[in-house]
Image (tube, rainbow, N blue to C red):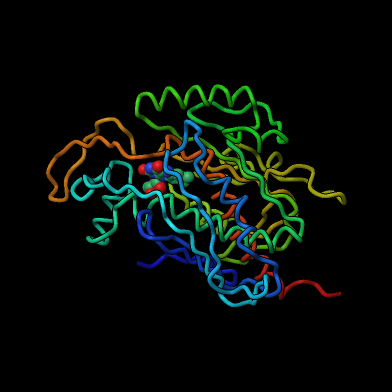
Length: 353
Ligand SMILES: Cc1cc2nc3c(=O)[nH]c(=O)nc-3n(C[C@H](O)[C@H](O)[C@H](O)COP(=O)(O)O)c2cc1C
């Protein structure tokens, strides 16, 4: 199975399955001398962990990150950093029916068609459990970016068709659904409860704002920054759409409206979303991404078995109701991984005069 690695200089490989003994990441290309210890991961891992919100799976994991290599006397050595997170709260019984049946909307069908033999327990390799390893790797990326003044903020813009109208950024971290509009958050929570009561699921839209990104990140022609950010974000399950800056709206504008006038103080507007010709322009990078509803639902659905015979499926396992807000720390981690890679790739071109 290929495709487990992202990045060219700052390279992240993840491993492990949802119901195997552990998941983790190997991070290559991290510069030496960066302070790193197991305690550095606690906050980021806690932000991804399910926490009793109506949107979250009841699965409870400690998500303690163990460092197996690449750190000596509390600092990175430049060698590959191996991070391991054990799986403890595993219950594979509800997944027995997946030996035969495919969940509509999930990866069971395509994994079967491609690999024929695969670990389907809890979604195996295609489970969102794998994203815990990405969040851990994102902590290391953050150690490279934050001294440069780069910060990444993400929030729930829309959930179950309810959209934030106010933007109180200072309350996001305290809001259960990480929504910047407290009134919309209450409506979203009610919607989630209604959906959970029906055994159904919903999706939403996340917005990501990258501030402090220096100009010059991104490489012609296939490794444009927007292309690599989109790849990093699209690698997260449930992601079905992405917009940068004015995004789809730019298709309805005229050039005179869409162009961002350049002044000695900087760009007057930011329809470009901080990227021009695949290279960061020093402005905020603005991204919106659409996440589909969680595929595992507790409503009877039509499917087929492995022999292609018609069947029905009704799931009873532990599932999230919506990928938001849990996907937000994962999206942030993927953005940081892509940015750290491009920052380290840009270093040889830095002007020294
Ligand atoms: C944070 C997060 C949590 C998720 N939780 C679940 C879940 O509890 N149950 C489930 O079936 N899918 C869950 N998913 C979605 C699946 O991982 C994903 O939809 C599936 O692998 C199919 O891939 P696709 O959505 O890219 O087509 C979650 C995704 C994310 C990002």
